[in-house]
Image (tube, rainbow, N blue to C red):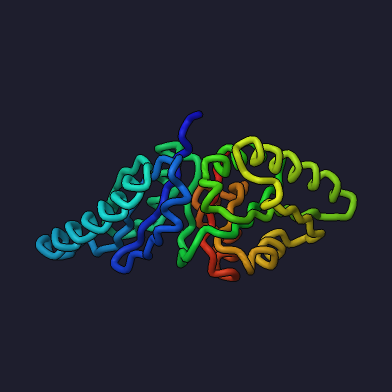
Amino acid sequence: MTEETLLIPVEFPDPMALPSTFVSGFTDCRVLLVGVYETPDDIDPDERQRREIEAYNTLYSYANQFVRAGDVAEVELVMGEDVADAPSRIAEERDVDALLVPNPITALDDVLISVRDPEFVDPIGRFVGMLDEDVLLHSTLFSAAESEAAVEEKRGLLGELEDRMVEAGFNRTTIDAEVAVSDDPPFAISEAARDHDLIIMGETQDSEFERVFGATYQSIADETDHPIVVVRK
C-alpha cells in the first residue's frame, strides 16, 4: 500500500504542540512539516539567522517524534513576507494527499469524518485507512444532505466509507454514521464535530488557496477550535 502524505504547517514564532497521541496516530503516513515564519524583508541578517536556526531546531524536533513512532518525516521552512499561502502552494507542488489546518491539537481519540461528494470516498478512505486503529478509538462518519430526498444517497456514501475502514482494520462497532439535512454544510459539520478531537474532510471547489485555508475550513476551524485534515483529490 502506498503511503499517504500529510502536510502539517508549523507556524512561527509560536508553534503549536504535537502531543504523542496525535503523532502515534499517523504511524503509516509520510509527514511533511512545513515551517511558516513571517518576517520583514529588511530584517537584520543576524536576527534572521537566529530565527531560522530556532525554527529548524523545532521542526527537526517534531520530525524526530514522528520518526520514533515509525513514520517517514521531512521538514521545509519558508521565511519572509506574505508566506501565509506557502502550505497550499507546497501541497500543490508536492502533490500531497492531505493537509492539516492548524488548531490546538489535544488527542486523536474521537474523529469526525465528513464526506460530501462521491469522488472523495476513495481518497478519504485511503487516508483514514492509514491511521492507527488502536489510537483512533471512535469515528463518526458525517454527511450534510441539502434535502430529505438526498438522505439515502448520503447514507450510501457513508456506508461505502465504513466498509473501506473495516477492510483497513477498524472495528465496525467503533464507527457511527450520521446524515443531517442542511443547506449550510459548514455549519452542520461544525455542530456535528463539537465533541470530537479532529475533523477529516475533502477539499472544496474554491480557489487553490481557499480550498485549504479559505472561508469553508476557516469558518469550521473558528467555530469548533478543532484541527482539520483536508484530504485532496
